[in-house]
Image (tube, rainbow over all chains, first blue to last red; front, side):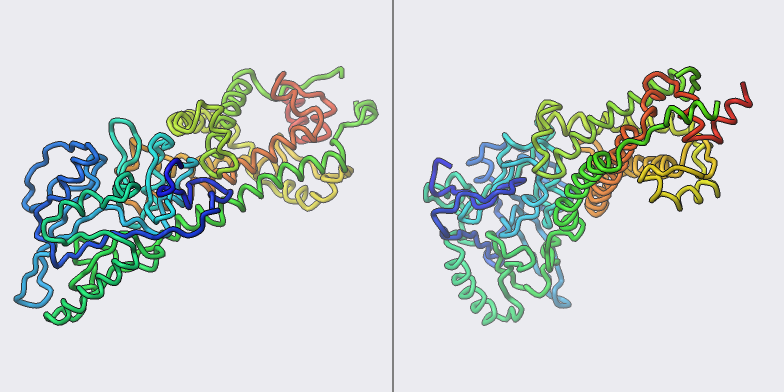
Length: 292
Length: 206
């Protein structure tokens, strides 16, 4: 990489080590405090604007969500949930959905195309569409249902955490635009510290189960949430409680790959050495003479 | 080589080699997406994206051709008691000690296992392949099915390729076999030696 700030730590479908002379870089994180979000969608607009994306004008289907789902043009989406957490106490929970930038990314693990998915030393997981072959394996690998295939070019797109902005020391566009300070950005360490303050504050205000969403099943994430009800993340439009790479994908992309490749190689070698030792199976000429 | 016995018609041969060409293209493009060590093979079909685009279409064509081919030899691949006796002597056979083997028909049990392995694995590859066919069909399936299909496709692909490696080696190992599929005929000595039951049937019919 030309930029030191975009040093690559892990690369899809690559079995040799990434350049690692420089050692550990500072890990970044985006912290989304759901208790501070007012659902204005400025982050969605800023994302479109900075990344130069234009989704189709959506339709109203009874809730505030627009568009209905993430797309190749909408890399982030406010998901609105009306939840009665306690009887008689309705809460309007608004979660900014998008790539979580897992420390152990299922997309990268599943991707068969070398360098189509990379993880920078700072923790950001980025898709390099020029290497993408459009197989959709990353979608299979993602525990959060984030990547979307473009109908235009059959390449997969998702939030980059504004890797281009972060690379030159700027905060992601959504962070920059958020009017309430619900989205903050910095080193992961600082963001965890910041979250602790927010959680203490929420607990003081009666949210006993307030907590940080940084799921260990995917090695932690570089996008984290402060949840008022961290004991039940599912109520936030289906945020998975304990996400991890599916065992199917882990099996497929784990032991199956080297074992099957080894098995095929072994079969070829077994044939070769059988021929060289036992020799061909020939019908002897005299057998033809005797029996005819 | 005086006397020749007809083993495959020109239509069977054409179909076999059509399937073989499809299979090689599929194995090459499939392996390319299976393990990074094989990714260079994707260049044979014009790169990763072309491999992804072409692989499923070739797969459907192979499945159609294969099942047409398989129906024709379905009845001759039922496993018999003589086959099982023959299988008990596999160790001897691999050492080219072939005296006193039970009389077997057009196919021995190894060929029959190959047949049923391919019938099963190609059926599984077709079904699982549809579920992971981007961008056409995958969006219609729930993610759990797609994940299971991706795993199943890899496993079935491995089984099919392994079976074909054994198939190709057997043809190289057993001299006089390949001409059955290239010329359509085998020598009478070959037929009597490897498939006496079939040879006698052919003789009776003529």
